[in-house]
Image (cartoon, rainbow, N blue to C red; front, side, top):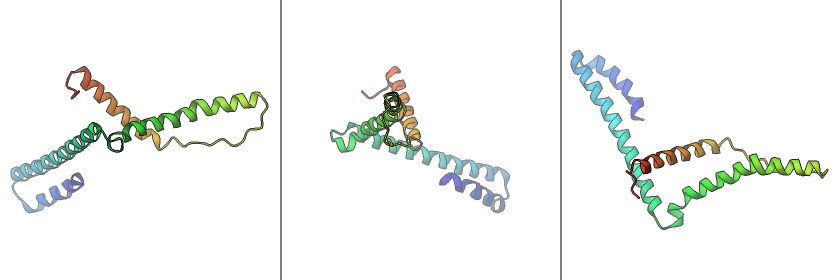
Length: 132
């Protein structure tokens, strides 16, 4: 949200402050402030994530693994189990009922995000900067 405000504020600075150096300094300060705020937000979210993962409660720390396993189950059904079942039943001349089709479009961004986090965690472990 702050990034969306930078351009309008910078254009206002052009109209209000006649000195080009002062304008550039203030524009840079505003952009730095926005970057700093985004960084603080990300660091806050990381602290929340670490607290959730460290929790012994399955309702706080267990939702990430549960999400991962549900995605694995949906992908396994969609790309392994269902095609194999359809093939076997067709070869055996069984009349197939309509098998459920699970949509994977919405799951892919979640999966890719989780895999990205996993890769960064593995990188931390290799570099010996991981918390545990």
